[in-house]
Length: 372
Image (cartoon, rainbow, N blue to C red; front, side, top):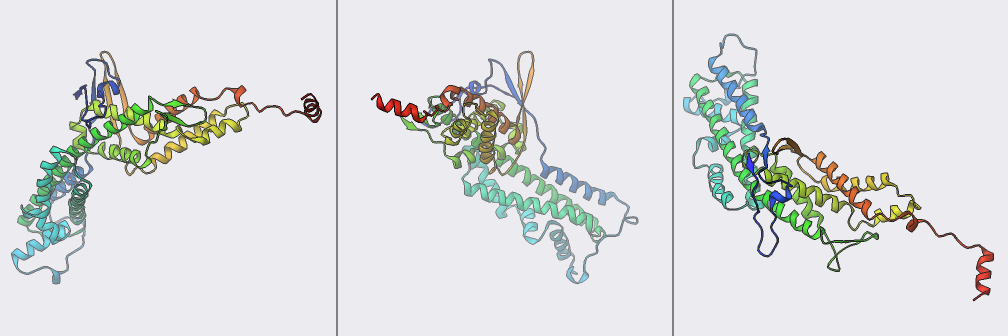
């Protein structure tokens, strides 16, 4: 549980948000982040359970499984153990990574731990960590499938114990990677909040006109789509990390949610000439359904590039009540569409401004011409 705290890391010369204010919290209120499960660790637990079952199981009564081809199993006892363990975890490269404390993967995670504490990782660093994380997951998936499919009688009890230790090592590596990525994502959420707050500051100084053009200091405001999509992706990647859910300031996440809703709603209608065209075509009767459909379409396009639909539940703890907020693609899209339509209604043209002017008949035009 995290208490509301003021401020967020910002850039020199740019406004920094008071996150408690952006999260709309009163003094003394708190935000609790609901814990989320780690699918990788759950699979590790299931795989460990399989090994532990084999260690204590009666091997005389078990269903038929695939046997290993003897021509590939080395006769030498040490080589045989290495072969079986490597087969179980997906190959010799994965085996060496798990048994060697100086393996490239282990060194990589150790080095990036210090970097993540100081600042967010670079895209190249992040890509290397994710590749290693996927390598560990593949070793686990392979071990799980192997234990379900292969005749485990091929393993001696000592080899099963070694496999058990390797899986524990892989589990520890996975937890470490998850922690490093979680620290990185906390930095990234702070950056997203800072950028969205800058957009919001601009939005509040906008001059809104019925033509659909929005001006800030006599210049058309521009929200870069790619940058906004990047903010969306970062936030939803972050909320899927179990370490972040346990350690992030919940107020920061609630502030990020509020800012994303506000900025996404503004993005869906600002400078959108097609919305004004809908007003013109309505002939004086503004079609709210058509406007809402256009807004929803713009918001869906923004979130269509979102790579992950992770979900996280926040609970705002007030003095005598609790209120839950969900961070998910669906709920944020719905909230953004609602806010956008409320804003559009403010600058919708009056019916008399859109009513077409009646055309003058031929006699009226001739009479008017004669009186000039």
